[in-house]
Length: 483
Image (cartoon, rainbow, N blue to C red):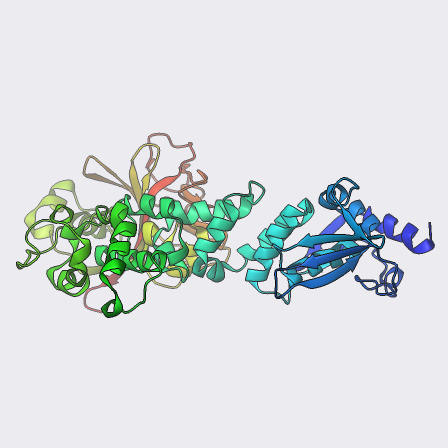
């Protein structure tokens, strides 16, 4: 065995370390490989790999000993039972991979280095699939981490990412991301650029759901876009033949009944639905298509606000340190408020993470936060008279408070230790007191939120020490009506 091969085998067995956007072997000595490019064109190769499909087939030359040493896939694929030779050269084909992806992984097998800094997320997704196929398990988490640092690209290309990771049990991080989008942020799927590539089973399950925070007319238009792509029709319907209409109807037939046409306004119905009346039957909606329609029914695609106007008014009576009695709260003269309320975060629409909370709520001024606890359906919340921020700082105030709504009755817990009233931290959601109400992680999935009374006067939960997750989470900006 030559010195080069001894050194190579030594470094191939070294542990991997990952940092930033590159992966390398600890103590890797560049000089050991500086005279040996990954195709080793000095003629010492014994494997010819044809990569890609005609007419774009390219050749990668390699050494079977290295490939088999570094990859269980090649250890099997290059065994005598599976290979064919031409002039003592093993000929191997990989038509399902691009040259860029395959060459990068072969270079990694030779050098122990893989950098993602200069490649696109699309290429990284191809690398992930190829790494799994070639049994390079050490790369899977690394590539997934890189992809998850590109959330905008993932959102725009959700259908492709979803269909890619679904069959691969090892893509756990991407699968968790996709499940989070499907369960908590489905409106992002309908806004994705590759929506027309969406799996039909997933589309059907989404259209069956309530509270996905998308107007019904928008769902109808996106369903049309999807159907037109599946039927491979011209985007201009004036060019469609009778056969085209029939093809589209066949594609959309399992989905049309899931569109809630009575929730579409008359104006939108005339503009967006009536031109496609050939696709519909009278079973899909109420009334005659040729007659004016009544106003739309209330939308079932949006969750109801956790606090109605009366409850917001009740809570506002405690702002500024006031303590109205229950009879005062419910009397007619207390039904008005000097404040205006604006919903700035809705978990169903925006997400349930600490990052989302700070992105939408930092530096906004006074806010009311409110949540519905998944396990018990309790409604609890709090008022912060100051702005939230992402610094690790405490806010001293005597005017913050916590509250709970039980059977329509409001119970308020005042701050007992003003120096501990509110805690801001970028890695947490809202924090009141010294753990009196803490939101952390993914509020809906992780069950890491909790209440432990210390700095406020009353318990706001029956089970004060139990961790919980939320069904809904909303934040209202509070502003004086005169300002």
